[in-house]
Length: 416
Image (cartoon, rainbow, N blue to C red):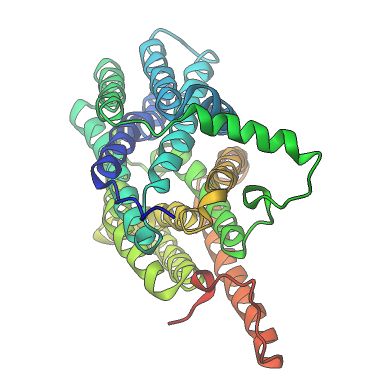
């Protein structure tokens, strides 16, 4: 056996920079500022929900085809394709109109989907297991800066279309620099070996870790990101309409979106640190309870009050925490199944993010803008109840049997 390879911290830092820079363009501007720009042009809640759903649908398509592209082109070229798709979207958005705006919506989502799977799977393969929570926390905190920089740019330029689209394309293009300065791990022999395994599978019944059963920790991560996706898709796609219905102007709306981003950026490392020490389930319960508290505070606060600002900080942080915890679950799983688990978590988040704005958009049209907060509160409250029930269900067999359950992932359910 060869000695363990040294941890490639420079490569980890470079790939984290790729995520951070591209996220500012693709999500901070593409997913958060574009809905404000569209609201200025008179889109109602159902059409705004359709645009948001088109973005998440594009992301879903990217997640589905990314493993196939990585196998044939490599991770570096797959990420590059994702960045290029987003640049094309920004270049064409200002020249189009409804319903053609759905096309760049699809392209922005496609770009995130390709980059997410290819870049983060590559990144998390380099991360030592004992540091997964903290590295994921730092990574998610840095990409959460997109939620600050994008809306802050909107405040500064009053959502001017030319500045917005130029900035989105520039940040996305800048992500290509650290990407192409990082040595690739792609090896043709690995592709051939993967194909050989698939060919021999019909003749041999040897178990393969990458296609084995889903670990309990990964299953919990999928549930967490499903709740987060329903909330994220609805919140960022429809909050401008909620704010408009409550009398907020464009600057106030962009300021609250910035506070969502600040909360998301500031709280991800503490969430990852807490997950490393208390376990995934305990962290999920705490974050979902805090999210419910933040939603209640936001619903009761005056639009421009300190309580609204504090609630926005906490709500943004807890929404981002759901994604962080899902990534922690995938990153801590068996490295042989990392690509499969990353894909499962990512697909779950994206599919639920398509559903979120569609439900909220039509509910807001039928029952009023406050239905947006009701949807968020129901999801976070249900997540608390589900995870508490899961923990109790795991404890019951242990009380009746001294043998325990070896298949329960201790990092997912530990209490100390």
